[in-house]
Length: 174
Image (cartoon, rainbow, N blue to C red):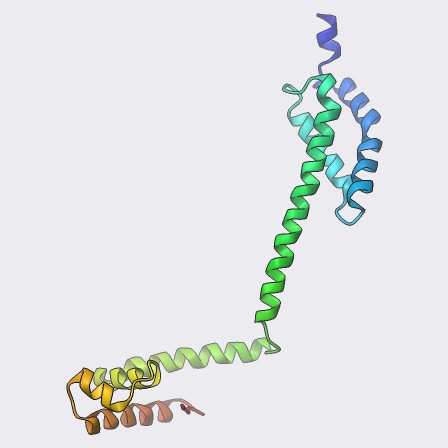
């Protein structure tokens, strides 16, 4: 019975002894294996915290193994996280541009105004315009789809374009 009390790592005195015995070795192990960049001393401290949190489950004889395994896993998890962050940054830096936040904001505002003007068009104008400019359909194809003459389609697109140009400054479309 006395042996079990001696091995109870939930006892602060025993835990302190484990800390004093293994903390320097654990720090050195992590530093030598992974370098200083990933804060090995923080991971060592986190491993001791996990040991304290699990003190009822870990025996005195398994404490060293537990500490080194947990600390090593914490470092590996941090490395995985860094890889994900770098991959994300690489993807998003390629997609970014040199546009200023003001330009992006103005662009978003313009797009909102464009959508509102499109919504205000008569349905037949909007449909003909979008079929032509968004889907790239020719006037003859649109006329066939809508069951009207090509001249009607041309008029609808022209009138939609005229309204868009009047409502939106610097509006042009190819």
